[in-house]
Length: 387
Image 1 (cartoon, rainbow, N blue to C red):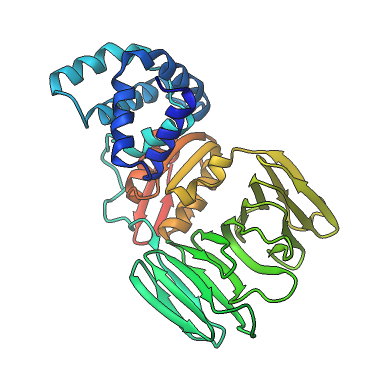
Image 2: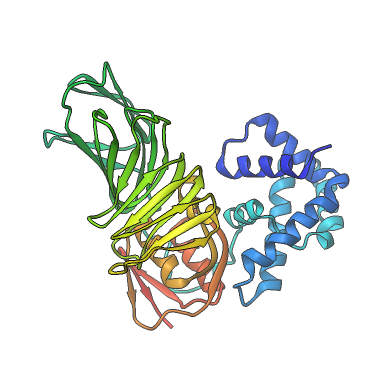
């Protein structure tokens, strides 16, 4: 028998695409085994209320999503007629979706697409692309190519798919600073010389030394980055965001969002500890906490937060948890490289659930329309918000 935790791990790995063939087969058997029905029903009941509470058509949406989830899970195994009868027997028991399942449901949800101004010619979703600016000013265009190597002094930069990795013969020398920039509609991963891993979201940049010399490791971030810091007690790691804000790393895993079009800088801790400094104020965060720093403020607000929502982007998802339409559209604008134009005020609806970042823009907008938002029209790279 599987425990609740084991089933959750299987679901999480399935969503992120890291579940191997044996794991997928194991997950299918879990969903087909009546012995797990009560456990799964309980898991689903806990999160549907949380994830879909902002939808005005909660019962209808929930039922359609549940039906689609079961069809997708059972599609991989079992005779068709047996599979259908199994789905029908269990439908009454499924009342919601666990946090991981909620994202998965929306990823596979097939919307009924009504006639309207949204067009399939809308811009495609983003992907792995960035610009690397070397210390001498040279510019290297990056994408999903494989096997590229760039030599910079005693350091070598290896590109493999959508990531860069730095290696160096030693820690000496003055190598200067490189800058990795992602455009709107781009993302990229980076492994620094010390082993620290960084994921850059769209419309972001990271300035960093090719080799970390001296007594500390300092980088400069604009936009959004997720960090997994390599341990080195003798060299503390710092993330500078602007002239007044920096994050001193005392632990390992955290996310920083510092877009110019957002109302605040947000630092979210997943593991370890970080000390956040903003003007004259400082705060030490524990896992699950987020520091919020507003421009011009001398204070740092600390709050509990949903870390899955904060780091959804690096796992290929948009996850919403009582999120308003303007905040969602800001994410959409950066990922699909579009401009949002409001002809009318945005809907007051709050959204819960998740969507795949690989979905077509038209499908994302249709999801928002179905959730009671405004209607939308796409013209080139402009998304126009209508009544």
